[in-house]
View 1: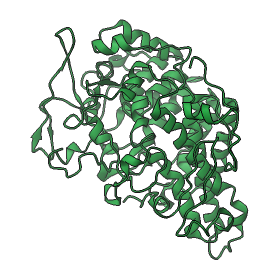
View 2: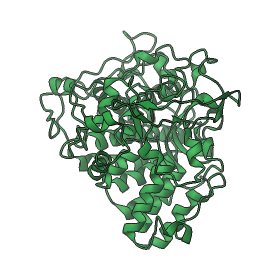
View 3: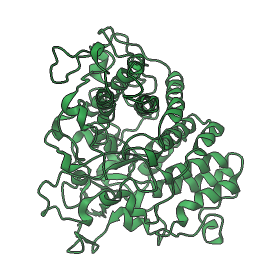
View 4: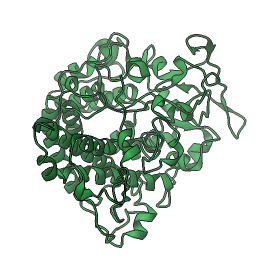
Length: 522
């Protein structure tokens, strides 16, 4: 079952902090004129509420409720855009965003709000320690601290991979003086420190409420953070500590509501329509009010807004007969709504009179159990968004091992293809050597990129992969030179590798923080 989200604090307790350049506001619990930070953290209810609030920043429309997936899936051109796609989402496809882009500003602010809420808990360690152990055990105090450190690390990771150098804030701001950027290397040091602490404080998945950070999640994220820095040995050490997880026998179970938190799930963002969603359009950054549903079902839905659809480039990556194609995409003639309806999608008309083939996303869609017409609020999806799952860890682990032992890495990578519902030919066999040989590291990396692109499509993984591999510019160039893009998108792409590997520092941050320096090219 789902945890009752992060809403306990969203309803009764607010840490409404803007970015690093702005004032922190008072905490608000029943009587905002009497309850101040200095008088908080007197019991476990208060600790838990403060920790719950940290998670809530993942649910804003700037993050996993909306723009997190557009900002990654569109930049990687896993999506192609339909004509009705709004300009700020098309900016990701075209790389035409600048420092005025509202959603990029909201992303920045959502992350820093989450960081400030984490800082509020972490810096209260002395106060929390004063609570008698017979009221809150030492182990519980430690695990709450671990949750706050895990989430602070996660928000900083999401910032550093998008903006590079960012301000390093380890305290809740008390004035409006602003903070200068710290080098990305220093941000990574702090992320690793927080995650290392979290690995010693957090509980195992079996001992924790669903939806909360766990020891396995901390090790997995630590490994990913080290991999992004090309610290393969350190990443492998972390990944080797991700134990107790297995691959879902049925690949699609990773993306259905009834099978959330399955054996493959390491960390995911909670959504629960039953918990309420009356404030979902008013939660750009604050996580205030009820916003417990996700817009992805409506926005990506081929029978709903249908703003985007899986690109030809992505679809052509799948090998013939790969069952994951039908698990990920809806094609004409497929049943949905418990078999009561049949998918029908027309091609996209283009400016030259030709058509461009379209399919629909099946991952994270509610259509398997309902139709748009039969759903009272088709915008609302209660399907959790996966942040990291075991297949991702296995493929990252294989990448680490391959640096010194390619055959051993192939064995690890093959686990993802060998699950019962996939059962594709294994790398290293004659069937695969003709297209994806793995005789050396260079060949292995080509195969790995293919496997990650297929296995993890639509999960906000590919664009960060392309950037960390130094492959982004070549990929976009290949797209523009080929025939897989819609005519308009090919003409509109403005990718500049000198600037577009990072996002711009948002305008409102530049205006309010005199110490802030804009990223190159913006």
